Length: 459
Image (tube, rainbow, N blue to C red; front, side):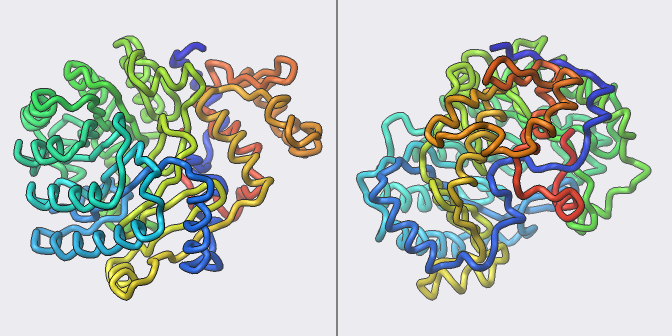
């Protein structure tokens, strides 16, 4: 399978619209308060019977300052004394899981996100990770990753991560231009990023990812070109390149960014083309959406082997595991269920310390949901779909299970985004950037008028 980056400006402009990123199906707007703590307790007990391996997520919400582009659930504070009580709450939540989940089920993946996980002091990192190790059994080759912010990082932070089993790092960069950094309230000189990167290599982390963004205030195509050329000199294992979604109505801090400082839609497309061309010419495979990886990276290998998967951690090589999320706003996933923790600190803390699950909403998948999730996942990961194989267990025809989908796909097929090869739907190279649009034709919940404002644009 080709892992090229193919850019067609006219088609992108024609199809660019709000749409889900499909880290879940059904997507988060369709979670409901009808699924609560009791339902999650029942589901957890049932997962032991299936015995799937585990993926763990811990959300550390604290950051010292607010980056104006940020869309994450976070708390801006310089009070580092807030982290110890939060670890106490996380440990109580870990206890609840450990009391139910069979210890023989191996943890194949763990990720700390935020916020800024390295807001924790080195001894707090060791304390929290020690609590995790005390309650779960890790597979020998587990993928254990953490997000870091080079701006407030010591080598001791990284040593604590490495000593406690972390082997992957995701490092926020966004942009190297001083004017852009000032505009988004994230001053991060290249020398600081280089120092953190070199520490990571020295300490033996197996994989490093750099995050970049386009569409930020004060960016131009030329400044983005300089940023990506600088980033390539680091030679990380992966890149994640995100489109800045300016949503001041949903994220009030984004209102600080002046509309006049934002690049035009035409310039944003040029930025995307510059980044995609530079990374693929620099030897990275275009995984899809906003991810690039070196050809020998596990993510690129998994895509070639058709074992790549998507969940709330983005692209992952660990399909089939149950995702258990700890911390405020964390989203868990099993074969049948998605559910989300309270997004605010006080209700999250109150629930956990009262011995309750802090679940605020969720959804139990129907059989139809499961097949549509599988179809969307395979499209997003493989860029092709063998409909005959997928429908074999259903004893039905494509048009019966997916009424109206072929008609919905017809314009995209006519435009060359996708093509039919017998029972195989193939996403063509020029359609890979628009794979979200193709996946949306299989989404039975999608109501453009009602849900469009909840999603970022597909490009």
